[in-house]
Length: 419
Image (cartoon, rainbow, N blue to C red):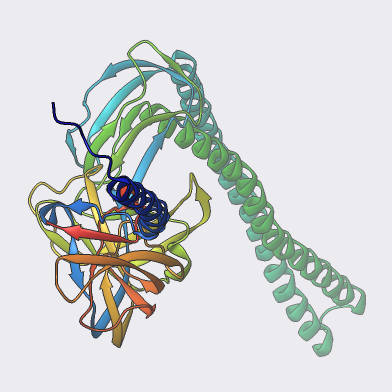
């Protein structure tokens, strides 16, 4: 039987080899751990077709703001009730084309109709009294003229007799007393003649005064009658202007008070755009600035005509007066999209407006690298903005390509890979 010979050298070599392996393992593990800790996370892959890329460029820049709105008539008339009444009939419905004398509603008011009859009868009575007064005063005037004529005749006869007696007295054919009596009579009648002529003059003024008083009463009653007649006529509610009937907010049988709105009439040929502009963008809008209004069936040019001083629900109402021809289908309450031009700049570094890029802010945008397959985050300072573009102040150069889409899903990464 063969016996194994002990080899201490082999056992010692194995032991040394094990020790070397353990030392190498202990040395390599920390190095690998350190290397792994320093590795950057792998760049996530993003489909190129799902992002919006744009190139930074330099050139003309048009600052503008955009807002949604509606077309509204420039002239809208609410027709109020000028008197109390009850709606008897509706003769026109919304959408009806109206002329100024078109009757929209008929109201009834028995008390007003009775008041008109009373006013007409009072007017007729006053006119009869005026005619009677004219006849009476004319008769009195004629009587007064006749009396004055009699006095004038007596005075002329007495003057002639006094002249005759004076001549006879001069010739010695008539006593002095008789001549004096004739002269005294003539002088007395002369005074009476002056008084009667003065009475005639005063009589004319008195007649005019009395007639003026009665005429004033007639005119007052005539005005009252005209007022009542107009009020009764106003029971037939007319359009007043050519246009289209938009609303009739009353029903047959309804009682309406003075001042109540009975109908709304608009002129659809004269429209303006009411745009709602975000309050943060409305600060630079001025009266007279050029605008474009998109009706989805054509674009109409216009100019800013009014800016509402109040802010409502975060927006400012801006009126745009339309200067171009209205496209087919343009009508009141049509939804439109308006763009207002703020200013034109000749030379500006700009890029398309990113999803979350606000004016005068700093944002992180992914900029394409030289290989065209990777994009790194860059801090970009933005300036003035327009509807579709924004000024680049710092962080990008002309020719750089950046991603403008919403990249919030990759906020944890500073570098992505485009597939």
